[in-house]
Length: 233
Ligand SMILES: Nc1nc2c(ncn2[C@@H]2O[C@H](COP(=O)(O)OP(=O)(O)OP(=O)(O)O)[C@@H](O)[C@H]2O)c(=O)[nH]1
Ligand SMILES: [Mg+2]
Image 1 (cartoon, rainbow, N blue to C red):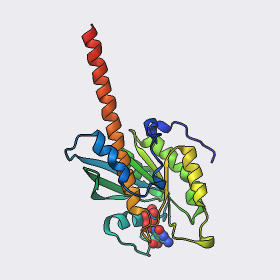
Image 2: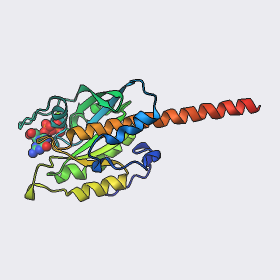
Image 3: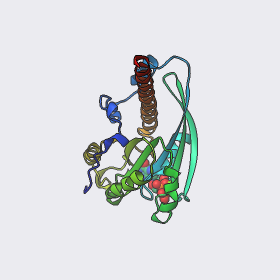
Image 4: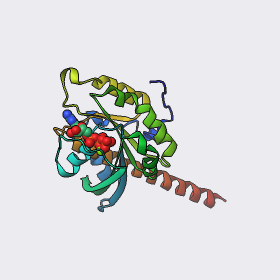
């Protein structure tokens, strides 16, 4: 890839470095950090997530599998953008995900950019059977960098991992390598057989909560430091 993005803070805040990469995590057992470090009352969080990527990589299918546990073989291009919501539980917390599904077509690109505002999480999808969709990752990242206005959690997703033999054009290792270069999370999923679909959204939610927790700690630190400064005057 021509461009190696080093401003990793917008993709994976540096204080996330000690967390395991979600593609090797198999359960939600690690969500214990939430129970230990935040108070025990049930907090409902609302997060906005956006699905991006070339046409026909499977964004709508991925969302449909997660929300309705359904998969359709036929292809109907998404018109501009639509959203679906689902509440899931992470540890003690109820997490409401509002997930925006966008169309991958070039024609609507300038319109869909409006939907990048205020996103908490980005899922950039390529099709492991379509080299072009992988090559276009940099184009999408450029759009993301130019249009997102706040810190977000970023997952790169290779969809259609049910494809086998010579149907596969991008190896797992290749996907993992670029995600490491870009310092973003990586998983392969299949909207068709459901592999890793729930895990993707669980991991995303977990990291979104962790992000909130980190910013709360930063705010508390700031408050504490300001108070100490005032007291010493
Ligand atoms: N084998 C396989 N096919 C898939 C998978 N996910 C989606 N497809 C197929 O790929 C085609 C495109 O899927 P969509 O979900 O409509 O793709 P999209 O990214 O939403 O496309 P746009 O709305 O045009 O941007 C459909 O024929 C799906 O059945 C998958 O995991 N495995
Ligand atoms: Mg679609």
